[in-house]
Image (tube, rainbow, N blue to C red):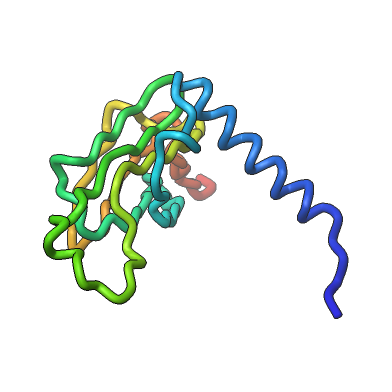
Length: 144
């Protein structure tokens, strides 16, 4: 027996429509151009946002990160293994080819300070927050 949740279906439809429109807005249809989608984690810290994307087997030279109009775009390609090496395999689950992800960043993101690095197949993108949105400590003085 499963619980019927009508909002989950609407939320799923909305996510699919957003993905479709994001690709069209960029002049590409993501469904047609992306052969796989890397898993991503996003965290907000006090002074920055951090995005981690699983990109095992992807060379840093094959990763393209751009920021335009508040949209962070991550795209690239995992090179296909040589056909000779793939022959004789009993099972093939790893995906090769192009990937494409887009993320809307909040107005507090500082586009000029974005940096990226890879380590052990994980891409880390650091997006600092603008200085003017950092919390300011106000010192309370005593009576006197």
